[in-house]
Length: 406
Image 1 (cartoon, helix red, strand yellow):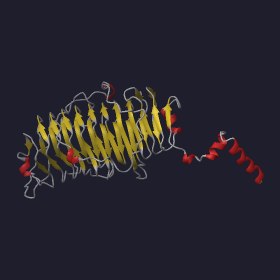
Image 2: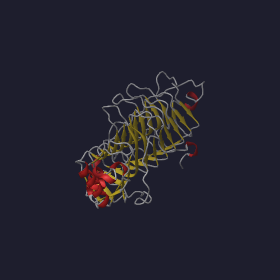
Image 3: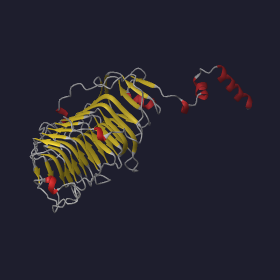
Image 4: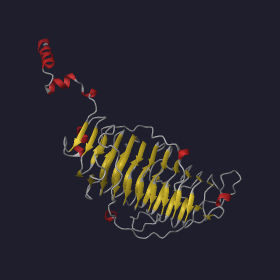
């Protein structure tokens, strides 16, 4: 029996180009990452994903692609060559544009629209309580999807940057059910959504920074809910954002909330600092109970507010501060009046409370009818930029260097 085996080995040495022998000569586990092109190498993005191995780059040429993409291979990068010309169109039939179930996956430089649920979804194994670790959405345009634009759920170690999201009946960008989330949302724009940014039962090294939340029904909403695990929402940092004119009656409607810049619904230990909050008809920054949860230990500091229905509002129980405090904000109106004295960030704060505002939320249109956005900023050097696999640690942010936007 030894002789045939030896002959096969010798044959492999002589004819190493045969498929069978090259598999023996170079173990598949040692294959270097490659670039797989769509449609040159595989006709569809899903076929390319199915053929890829960890570390590969899937480079998608300009065109419109239908169907959903499910990613179960870790450390893949799906990247369009042109953000505005690589388009995933769900035709209001398919559930998710890109659904990522594996660690360390990046989705970059493409547009996704008209899916029944989400544009791009990152999620771990909900049933087993296992979180996805490492994700990135960068230079992604998501519009007119049935729930969320970019949706990270039960996932940590994330980066969401240079995203544009519009026309969603839930929120443009969502980070939920994670602690610590270890995630950064930055340099993004959300408009014409029910909510620009929403984070339910999330927090812990979760930064929402240097972004624009405008012309939604609600701009930014960290909130607690019994409908998901890991309540309450806690320890989200919201710094250096433009949060303006969130009164869009032509945005899809999800709840009765309307005309609010930032609303902390029963959240704990959040920092809202150095944001520009203007033109929100109901309230600029609002701390409020949500379901069974009360807002506690939230700090509102150094924000510039103007032309809001009421600039600063704290709806608390029994007028106790409960650790909530306001300091160094530039504003005109507040409820309770003199909020920075009654709810100062000092031990001698006496407390005070206000009545919750009752906005009248106009009926909204069908999300599928929101106009498509204009072309968005391209990822630099998309065809040649090196691949970087997201991990458990999010990008570093120098919060001290962030100033109030002008």
